[in-house]
Image 1 (cartoon, helix red, strand yellow):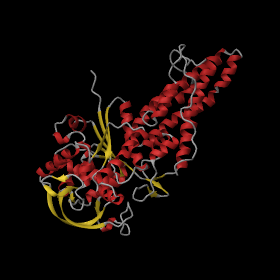
Image 2 (cartoon, rainbow, N blue to C red):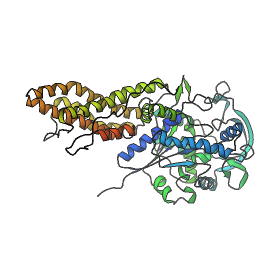
Image 3 (tube, rainbow, N blue to C red):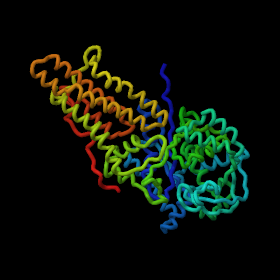
Amino acid sequence: MSTAPKRYYVTTSIPYVNADPHLGHALELVQADVLARHRRLRGEQVRLQSGTDDNALKNVQAAEQAGVPVQEFVDDHAAVFESLRDALNLSYDDFIRTSRDPRHRPGAERLWRACAEAGDLYRRHYEGLYCVGCEQFYTPDELVDGLCPDHERAPQLVSEENWFFRLSRYQDQLADLLGSGRLRIEPAVRANEVRAFVAAGLEDFSISRSAERTRGWGVPVPDDPTQVMYVWWDALGNYITSLDYGTGPDADAFRTWWRESDRRVHVIGKNILRFHAVYWPAMLLSAGLPLPHEIFVHDFLTANGRRLSKTLGNIVDPAQLAADFGTDAVRWWLVAKVPKVGDTDFTVQRLVDAANRDLAGGIGNLSQRVVSMVHRYRQGVVPPPPEGGYADTDAKPLLSACTELPARIDAALERFDLRGAAAAVTTVVNAANRYVEQAAPWLLAKAERGGDGDAGLRLDTVLGVLVAALRALAVELQPFTPEIAGRLVAQTRIVGPGGELPTPEPVFPRVEAHGSP
């Protein structure tokens, strides 16, 4: 009796559109895309969602500085974010824009009313230090020399009357969820950080802003025209508003991908962990809705030790990088060279080195050598495996690595260790290249021409094993470098009337360090 495929719903955070995207945004997009492609490869039903957070006050201020109407400004920058689908070869199924998507406002309003009906919303006066860049209040002891730790700017003193959410009511429930692992956060250092934050005591937080201060931009608070929803309230809601939650909790998409999904996964940056691991679960508890299962948290990309940031002005354009060096080169560096824990300093030279070593010199060189030898020594026809399988002792490490590769990738991605998953691929590539050197097919071919029949049989085995390794790599590379995987599939597919492989073509050429700074 067959079972239905598991459902896997994975989302990125939705970035502000006060400026164009940088490589840090690409990191999160590619990470989520790898997870989604991998789950599809394993036969699961997958929904990958991204989008843009259009309703932030910082978007309003950026539009005013540019002298452009807010909607026009937001539309222009959101379009650049959405264009990363092609530049980075992303496979998302939905892209929500919080200022434009007709699904969003009704869903945000329904979530607000559900929490209000639970008795968790109230209005009071508040005064605090507000960073527009983060769209959050800070206490004085959270600042560094009086500045926002992320944006290195002094926050504004804001005093106004707002709506508040009773976060304090959910402290015990959140502590239990985090302590039991029912709300899983990876890596462990981030889980510990959230548990410590909750244990220190939760305070109610402001969930609206005055319509006057926000210039009326944002989602209006139901039944209170003087206030608009705090941008994080409506932004966090995008994960369910996109699923037609606004039409009711029985909506097909909401039921399929949220209420009944086997895995609900958020991929976010460490700077917005509190919103996703504390505020968002509490809002869902209040509304009586299921929580996410997992929150995967990445650290920052830096340039010269400083976080890549639109505010700090040290952005690296991912679309330009992809145009200069190839989409798969960018994807590979983001996956294979960024660790699970710790910030990673980016330079173009590091990207080029990784592309040339791992892609051109590793996978590309292996493919070129193997396909060329099949043509040179067997007229392009891959020798069939011997009855009973390959018994070559020298081939066992490579064959074992190929067999173990899917499980190794599964285990690494389950830990949100994308670099570990990429390393499993590299292990097979290195094993295959070692096997070529050990087996020395060119010497076997020479011996066969001299009348050594055993050398010919051995050569058949070597070529067959190597093509099998290429085919295994072609499958498992799909989530990481889809274009290279497609070329590997093409290079190892029978195309000739006599069972021949196509003529050898490069699957990834070497690149040079030019173009983007």
